[in-house]
Length: 96
Image (tube, rainbow, N blue to C red; front, side, top):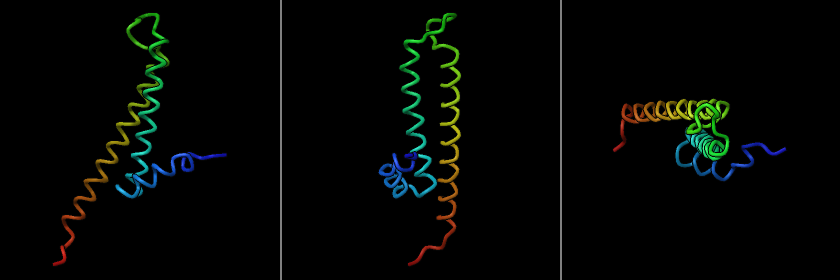
């Protein structure tokens, strides 16, 4: 059985190298969530709500809301990690 770590090994290695292990994995998770949002959004075009045809069906709205919420949480963690890294680098004495 293939895991997500196996499937996304190349992207994980690239992002972990650029951003560090934690932020790199979060970046790949954001990409996966973005892909899911796109697929659900496309599906929503064909499964419109009977109450409001301009919106996706209620179950798709729930999925979209959950995925968007997950993205926001991941982005907040990435911002916090970046702030911690910036604070740590500004308090570390620089070598001359």
